[in-house]
Length: 231
Image (cartoon, rainbow, N blue to C red; front, side):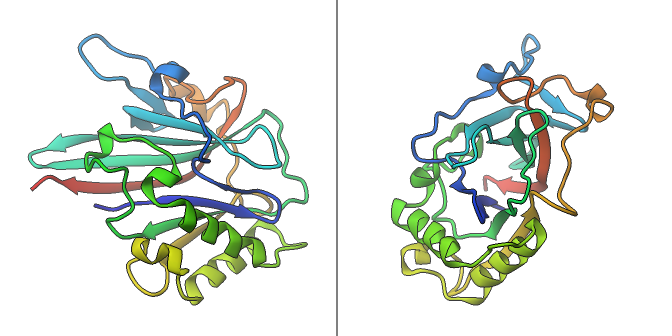
């Protein structure tokens, strides 16, 4: 099973998905359309999802949310999953001089889970999948990296380098596959090269808008495909 765990880090925004106190909104909360006799289906541009989770980012910058959406189909003993991670933000929101970056931890151990191995029937916050001690260690390490004055791209590169080239904190040892984090992917959220919100033209094929309030913009930060085997 391919797992992608998201930690959001920047010079001002420091948050995890989802913060411990967050209320996670589901498809029912954001109005995914349901056809009789089927599960919910939420098509965003060219991706169709059957499960959606929305969590507000607990940070000094208000109005930001993470959206994790999963869809796919079962063939025999395998589930083929299409996953998308979106940033929700108020219409017209501008990070300004804030360098914002998302780090995707794509190679984690099987210990990162919500207890139930069925990804379609599980939910929770970071402390449910990992531990509060590991979450604190990750954010503490990020806070020690000097990102002052850096653009989103530069902040991403520096954070990625620090996490990739130094030993895993002892509190996170059970959740890494080796003595150092591997497979970290960086996504700039601000500045040159950062993804832009889904436009009105792109959105003509969408059947729902999985964010609250509905006036917020959605920006695709990461998209991936994975296979879950039940053998």
